[in-house]
Structure formats: C-alpha cells, structure tokens
Image 1 (cartoon, rainbow, N blue to C red):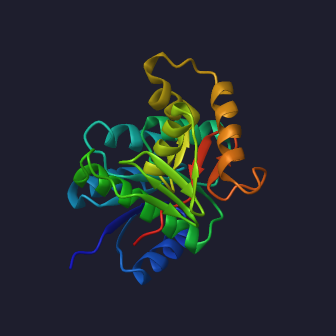
Image 2: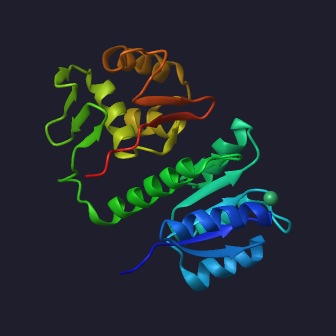
Length: 235
Ligand code: CA
C-alpha cells in the first residue's frame, strides 16, 4: 500500500492547513513547505508524486520553481493562485505546469484536479500508444483504437481535424489545455498562433456533440487560456 505523496508549497498557513486536511482525509501523504527554497529542497529529498504550488511565495516567484523542476523532472505541478489573470495562467502552463486552480476553490475541484494530473502522469509512464482504454463521460464514449465517437449510443461523424482535437482533449481529460498546445498538437509545428481556426472547429464540434452548445457538458472553455474536457469516468 503506497499512498500518493503531495507537496504543498504555500506560505498562507490557513490555505496550507485546509488543503492538507482534505488531502489526508482522502488518503494522500502530505508534505508542506512555506517558502520556495524549502519547497525545492523537499522536491529533491522527498520526490513527491505531485506538487501544489502557490505562485506568490515570500522568497521567490512560483514560476521559478516550475522552471527549475522542469529542467530535471516531469512530476505533475498544479499551480494554486489567487491571481486570476489569464496571462499568468498561460505562462505557468507554458513553463510546464500541468494545471492550475484559482483561489477560492472547493474540495471536489481540488481533488478532481489532482486525480486528473496523477492519472495523466501515470498514463504517460505505463500506457503504450497501442492501447488506451476508451474515454467515457456522461453518455459519451470515445474509442481511440477505432476512432469512433458516440454520444448516447449515436455515432458522431467528425472531420479528421475535429477528431484530433477531441481525441487530444480526451487523452488529457480533466486538465486545461492551452490554445497553443492544441494548435501545435493538431496542426503540427507549422500552426500559426491564430486561435480562430481552433474556435471555428470547436464551434462545429460542439454543435455535433453538445445538447446545448452554449452550455457545454463535455468540453468547457477556460476563457483566455484554452479548453478542458470533462474528466474521464473511472471504471
Ligand atoms: Ca502566497
């Protein structure tokens, strides 16, 4: 029995305690750091399974920690921040953070983000490209091996580009994916930085898969940042 260990790097004691309590109750091992320096030491000595990182630390900016850790480790990092500026979220994600969560947040949101990031990092380590089990959520099934998408039993016909977008988001379900990341994964290195083509495709996808495209239940917009697909239902 080995529990997942979570390192919380956060200088606000009440938030650190709040998160620690929730995580212990859900069977995670919790390690805490109040400063960036202490956080970096614990990352090296304890090798946690996931890092929850506050961006505004007393001794350094959290982004420096992401930069430093990404030079040697792909351990999942979820940025926890009071900052709501989209630009900062995009910067953290582009530096290599896996996701972010904005204060104030609820228990279920925190746990869902952690599960999605851990599952994604496990999948990178263990799954071969050949077999990935189907994505399932609330009546939607995406069978990657057959490239078949069904919603409530009905097959949905997607264009090849639309399929690539949906499949990429489904493989990363529960995590926010920036516009740039989707553009380069679908259109390749020659993608221009223009989101318009992505927005047009997304509108078409939503028309095909959502009951009400204005109130999506499968693919959500993270304004100014990217898209997030609803978390895969675990078996
Ligand atoms: Ca802080």
